[in-house]
Image 1 (cartoon, rainbow, N blue to C red):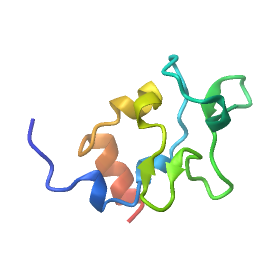
Image 2: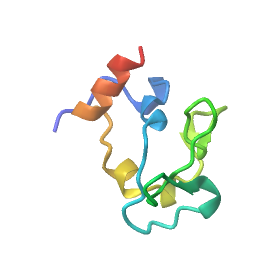
Image 3: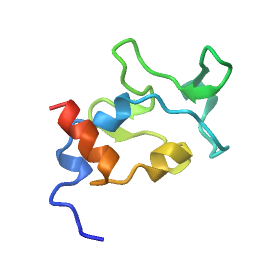
Image 4: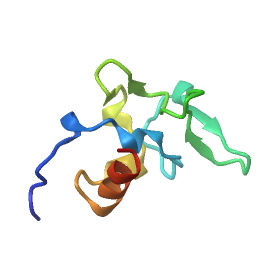
Length: 89
């Protein structure tokens, strides 16, 4: 695996605007979740679309150790990451 030429430090947290379904129990505090219209548990988002667990000052996850599986599998520099960065430029 090649190390990307960028890190999350130079990003605008584009991935933190995605819909995140909580597929497994990773210990996400319930204050950061909600139910979608189909009854699934998802990460809550603020009115502007950003994840409720995102620290707006640092653009870092406030629940990193308990983040959902989807977030754990979202690889920095991976295809999905690059697509979101491009869309949100």
